[in-house]
Image 1: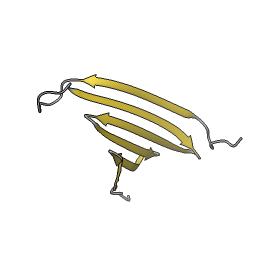
Image 2: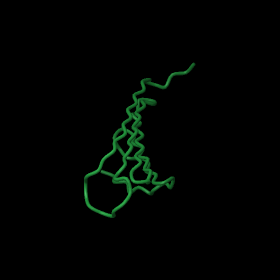
Image 3: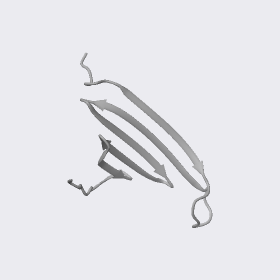
Image 4: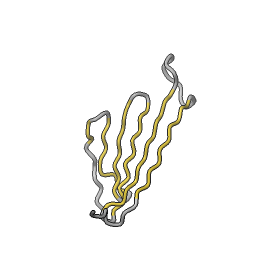
Length: 85
């Protein structure tokens, strides 16, 4: 069996229900937010995937070594503006 260069796997998941925060349209059950985060080390690079579901909208962010590499909102990949320093 091969190894994943550096190995290791960490996963964290949380779900929170909240009211508060801002006014806005009536009705509904209030705000719902679910955040699931997983971090993997692949070939020495730290890859973090964060899945956020809030008010019926799903957002998936993929970071590599702290830099945002991919953003998907409701299944549609978003174009990122890359800053070169």
